[in-house]
Amino acid sequence: MPDTAQVTSNGSADAPAGLEGVVVAHTQIGDVRGLEGFYHYRQYDAIELNRRRTLEDVWHLLFRGHLPDRAERDAFRRQVAGYRALPGFLVGLRFALVGCWAIIVVAEEINAQSGLGYLIMQAQTTNRTDIMCLCLAIYAILGICADVIVRLLERYLLVWRRGFQGS
Image 1 (cartoon, rainbow, N blue to C red):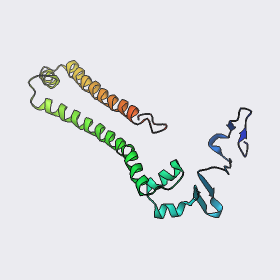
Image 2: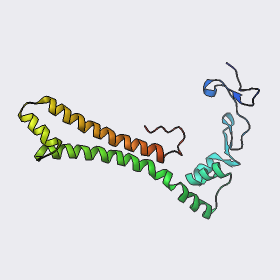
Image 3: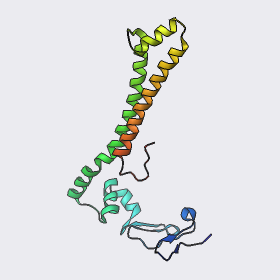
Image 4: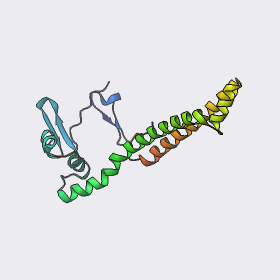
């Protein structure tokens, strides 16, 4: 296994799996010399950034190349606010859908006069397990469809997350 990455004729790097043994010395973003305890992002000490700056400040530094002033920080916070809230909203939406399906199934089973709950109650009294299984399968298919819709929303709305596959 090579100790460093080899640059190929087309300019791309041929690196070992997991970048094992590859030393990156020159970047514009940071400088890390772990044995010396030296960690810098851009020209700022990473430990001091952690102690004195907000997450948005460091995020701005990494993406824009400089620490923001107050106006830039406020504008950047407004810009990234949606990125922070959207995943949580979609998780809540998924939990809400699960809860709704459970409530619908229970409510229809208690006192239904029509619909799938009514069919299941009638099938139960006449011992028709085939109808009960079919109705339960319909409930399951509808629940899966709702989950697929949320996953598609995640894929569409969370395209900014690299590698996100809508799990």
